[in-house]
Structure formats: C-alpha cells, structure tokens
Image (cartoon, rainbow, N blue to C red; front, side, top):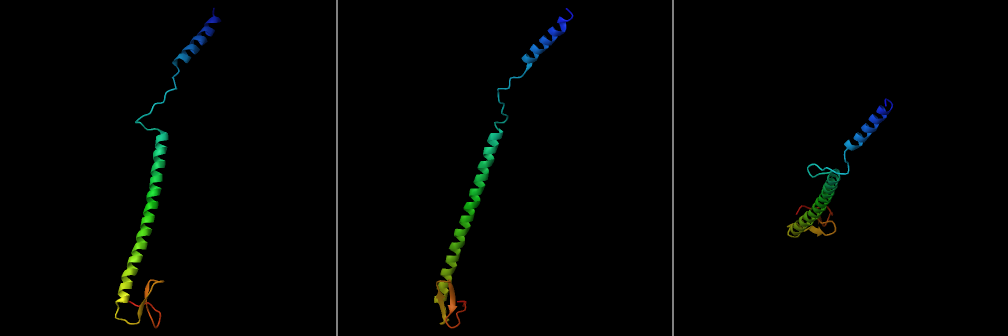
Length: 107
C-alpha cells in the first residue's frame, strides 16, 4: 500500500493539472485594435502621405510653369509697347532683347 500511494498521488496530480490548463483557442482583442489592424493603418497612412507629397510636388511644378508663362506674357506686352525702338521680343528665350547688341533690355 505504501508503494501504491506515491503512484496514486502522481496520477491524481497529473489529472488535476490537465483540468486546470487554460483554453487558448480564443483571441481577446482589447479596445478593438490588433497588430494587424495597426499595421494596415500605418501602411495606409504612409501611402496617403506619399501620394499627398507627390500631388503637392506636381501642383507646385504646374503653378511654377504657369507663373513663368504669365510673367513672359506680361514682359512681352511691355517689350512690344516699349518706347525703345531697338527692343524686340525673342520668343525662344522669352526675353526682351536689344536689336543692336543682343543683350536683354528692361522694357
């Protein structure tokens, strides 16, 4: 009987240890967020930032080109209406030049 008691105790303890183990087939999400959602949100924000920066870059370039054309149009008008008879408008360089020297003239 003395030899049977330790074997019986070990068997009893092992049975209770299996019954006490936690059930791990459930996922608990706190505050409705998970690592997957956080990663997806981070990637989405990064993509939005990239497209926003690209859009701003394109818009700045378009605005710069428009301003350049607008300034050239105003300068051409001033050059053509200038009292200086030697001033003429050079369309390739978008500048008002002197007929004699070829240097830029302020209209």
